[in-house]
Amino acid sequence: MRILALHGLGSSSSLLKEQLAPFIRALGKEYQFKFLDGEIPCGRGPGVPAWAPRPFYSYATGFTPVEMRQALSHLDNFIKEHGPFDGVFGFSLGAALAITYMLDQQKKQASSPFCFAVMFSPIFVVSPDDSFCEQLLRRWLADDHAVFRSKFPDDDFMTELEDPSEQTLAQYLQQILSMQSMGVGLILPNTNVDFLGTKKTEEVPRLIHPDLLNARIKIPTVHVTGQNDSPYIGKQSAVARDLCTASIRRVHSHDGGHDVPSKISDVNAIVPSIKAMAEEGIQIPDLYDD
Image 1 (tube, one colour):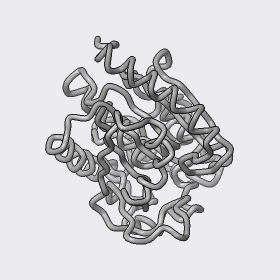
Image 2: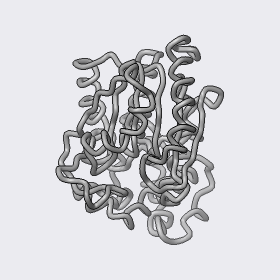
Image 3: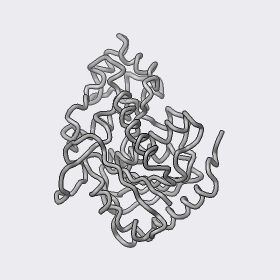
Image 4: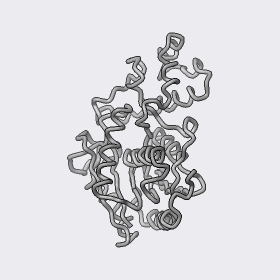
């Protein structure tokens, strides 16, 4: 069983190896892990312990469609060179990137590049498709939405939106901006947080929400979140979970924060779900093909 492992924002493969060590031991030699470092050097990420040595990396320079396509290209090239992989384990940004990649590959090939996935505390999921929500964003930048733009993201901007899709995307974008309080802007200093002030749709991250996209991840998944994670990230992890097929996913929580659980009791509770979802994914590939 070959597993691709993707680290979090402002982290590294070496740190993820330590974070996953209890799971690697519990899963046994049948599971072989391959780790990928991001291409972009950056600052220390949310939840990365003070003892963790530099360097730290990101898979993306930012979250615009162009930047996300570059991140997916790097990931795809690695998979073509070192794969195929039976499963993918991702933490934080790595989990979100894995979801983006799987949705993108399903759109291109009608199948998933993996048989199962394990997602630890994914952050927001972003599309590389510049046509995604394009018409909605163009409405926001039109003259009749000037009051909304002036109020977003801090004032009562929701009163200026009537369309449910607009409300969903606006609230999701506000959550992302709220992450600036966690120092995310210092991790990726080139990221533009004035999404609407630029009046350029290409500068706005195309956040993927299950209310805005009909497609779902077709393979079995395991989702693990910390009960004491940031409320903003907790909401993002719930959005990411709901982008996966409900009937073939398992959900776990632990009493930690934005991290991979290390308590033996947590590991022993989660590992059977991983093995069950891996077995189902291997035995029934592309179960939910259209």
